[in-house]
Image (cartoon, rainbow, N blue to C red):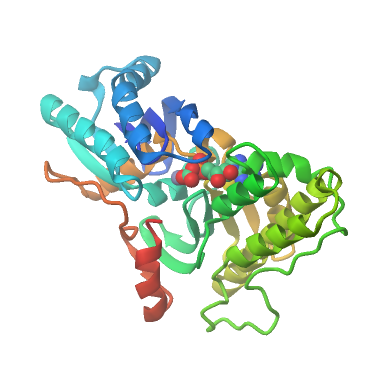
Length: 361
Ligand code: KG4
Ligand code: ZN
């Protein structure tokens, strides 16, 4: 049995977790997540404030996770920390703290790519959420469609050309006068909306697209956002139309994500779909994906909200995988705003060139 302490500080959550196990037989012994609510006042994450808040929180959060797990530092085999991608100042707090802890206690240090953490999150709750599968990662900073034949082997199929899915939810939330982050508010409001009142065209989704086309899997949400802005301006009674606008937006976005994911399922003959990232908290998305995947013979696995959003348990889980493979980090481990997922290749060279710059957004 290996005990891993995971640390996550890439954005606005300070989190630590202790997991225990080997290979795919893993249990979470503790998970502490401290969310920085202060950013709500500014309508988005302010990097400098995030870094300072991590500095204040990191020691009690890590101590809390060890205490909750009932283990001391000597019981830990490896310390896994998110070192990319994310806000560099925020990442550095976790990376430096993990390095000091590992050096002081003579423990193995493992650097984890945040998005690889999201790929592993669902496996902590569902024993069957293991490769081969298609992964759709949708958060405030990322929208990635991956084929995962085995842990550590990732083929980038599609990504967003502009806004991430969560970012689109948040920006549209702002347009509709909803609090930040807008995602959960839009989902709630959309339930009262009339689906026939506003029908927005599905972004980057056309019947004539074929598997070799570079927009076959990619998505883009900026056009949808503009369509919503124009509809908001044209409305003579926003109070009356708000719920239906939220519904129209969410339907278009979900339809696109579901269809692109099912294209990947069919092309790669996968029987499982794994969802991850904050937007995977959207029950309407999970329900639509589950229903339509069934017709392709595929099952959908989504983490509960605590593991869908940023957390250190998924970092510890991906860290365990890297630890078992011997991917140990040294004192030179650094933080990076952008970095490709280790073991990731693209369907084609062109997509690779774009994918590498798009990953850290
Ligand atoms: O993964 P996450 O916690 O943070 C990162 O961006 O890494 O994701 C946050 C995003 C926000 O954009 C938020 O609006 C979105 O997840 N989100 C939702 C829902 N809950 C959270 N989007 C749509 N529906 C939801 N229920
Ligand atoms: Zn994330």
